[in-house]
Length: 84
Image (cartoon, rainbow, N blue to C red; front, side, top):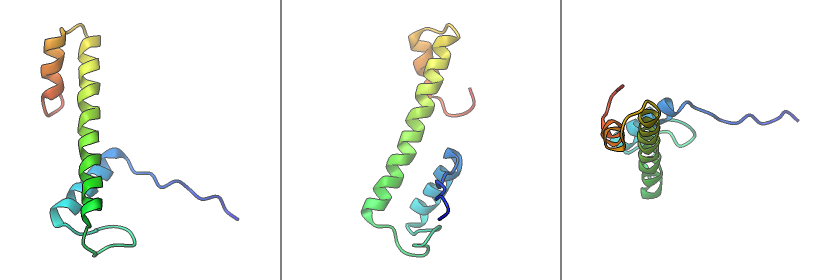
């Protein structure tokens, strides 16, 4: 029997797919493709997107502190959208 492989997507790919599904309110990938999202499934996708956003903010905050910025400056940087 062959070993099962873990299904893994990069966070950006997963987030892009989740946002597309939330906009269309229908499964766009996998065995449920074409079926409408249930409330529970929509909440899971919203939560995953929020968690990704939180992780990005924390990363930016800690990186700014490591660069010698003050806590106020780091907080402002962590809330900006974009590469800086």
